[in-house]
Length: 621
Image 1 (cartoon, rainbow, N blue to C red):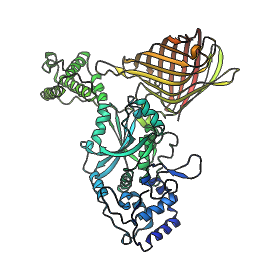
Image 2 (cartoon, helix red, strand yellow):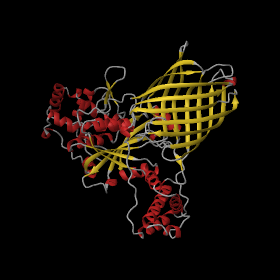
Image 3 (cartoon, rainbow, N blue to C red):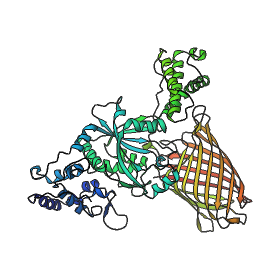
Image 4 (cartoon, helix red, strand yellow):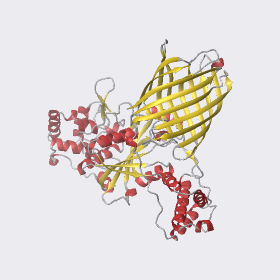
C-alpha cells in the first residue's frame, strides 16, 4: 500500500465525497469492480482483486474490500505528493479511477490538488491514439507459452494508415522470465510461478517476432470504440503499467488480462466472466467477435512462410529449383536458364528466391556467407525486369474465431473382441489432427487433460486413459522448408502385461521424424518412437520400448478426414511386451461444432492380439 503524504486541510471535502460514494453505492458498481479487477471468490463469499502488486491498492485490505479501496483512493486524491521520476501523485498514478469517480461524483477541482501529471501526459501524447486493434498470432508449437496462440492490443495513431501501421505501438501482457527450459517454463506457468506484466512496444518488432521469426499468421481485429472509450482503456493501461499479476498459463494469461483491460471501455462489456477455469487466446478472440458492434474490421497478415508457400505453389518444378538455388546463393542472377524465362516467370522466381533468403536469415538457418550482398543482388536483378510484382494474393480462409470450439465431449459405443462397451471422453482443450482444421494450424495437435472412460458389458466403468499433455506437430517438409515433426504425450493409459492384467499405467510416449505432403489433401509421416509404461504389475515394475510409426492423413472430401497409421515397438528393458498397432481413424463433420468419428484398431501387445471398433459423436463447446 503506497504511503501518500496527507494534505493538511481539505475542508472536509474528502468526507463529503466518501459520503456521496456510499449513498450511490459506487463500490458495488461494475465499473469499479472492473477497474480493480475484482472477481468473485471460487468458494468463500466475497471478491478478490486479481492484481497481485501491493502498490496497486490504496487501502490495507484493498485487494479484498472494494469499498475500503474506493474510499482510500478518494482520500489519496487529496495527497500533497510531488511528482518526481520515482513518484506520481495519485491522481496521475490512477487516471482511470480518477476519471470515473470524477464523472460519478462531480468533483469540484477548486477544492482538490491539481497536479500536472507530466509523465502521463507525455506518454499519452506519444501514443496519439485514434483506434485500438486486437491482434491474434496463430499457434507456435516450438514455444510452450505460445502453443495456443497469442494476443496483443495495437494502438493505432491518428496519422497512420495501412502503409505505416507497423509504426504503431502495442500493449501486451506476458510472463516476465528469461527461462529457456520449456519444461520448467510450463510447470512454473501452470503454478503461477511468474510475474505477469503489461508492456508497451513497437508493432513492427512484434510482426518481426511472430510473422518473420516464428512464421505465425496474424489476424487484426479492429475495434469499434468511441474516443472516450479508447481514453478509458489507455488510462487503465497506464495504471496497470507498474503492476504485476501472478501469471497462470491456462487462465490468468496474456489473453485473459487483455480482456480485463478492454472491458473497462464500456460498462456493459463482460469479457472475462466466461473464463473462470481457463482462457485460450482463440476463445478470447471469439468472445470479442460475439459482442454486438465491437469488431468493425478484420485484416489478415500472412507470415513469411505462408507467402513463400503460396509463391511456390504456382511454380513448375524447374522454377522452384531455381528459386531455391537463388536463395542459397548457388545460382547466379545471370544464369542462362533464368534469363530464358518470360519476364513474369523470371520475376516470380527471383522474388521467391529473395523471400527464401530472407526466411533463412530471419529464422537463423542461413548458410550464405554474405546474405546481405546476395539480397542486394537479387533486388537489383528484380528491378531490371520490366514486369509487375508477382506477389500472390492469399485468401485468408476460415478465421481462427470461426473454427470449432476448443472443448470437446464425446460419447460412443463399440466392441473389443466381441465384448460390447460404452465410452465417454472429455477434452478441455483444444485440437487434434483428426479434428476439422478450419481456423486452426493444419497438422498441429495440442490437447490437455484428455480423459476417456469405458464400461464393458457386465463390468464396472473404468478409466481408459488420462493424458494431461499430448502434442503432435506434423509440419510438412519440402526442398525449401524442413521442419521436424514431433510427438509427446504423458499421463496414464491402459497397458497389457504377460500375466493378463490391464493396469492403468504411468505412460510417457515420444516421437521424432518428418512429414511430407502429396498434394493438398494428402500428408504422410514417419517418426522414430519410444514409449515406457510403469506399474507394479509389470516384471521389474516397467516396460520400455522403441520403434517406428508410419502414418498418412487423407481428406477425401471437405467434411471427411482419414488418419491411418501403423506402429511397432521392440522392448528394450523391463517386461517384454513388444506393442504394435494398426489404427484407422475417420472423422465426418456434421456442423462446425459436431462430428462423427469411427475408430478401428488392431493391437498386438504382451502376447495378446485383439481388434476393436468405436463409433462416437463429438460435440465441441
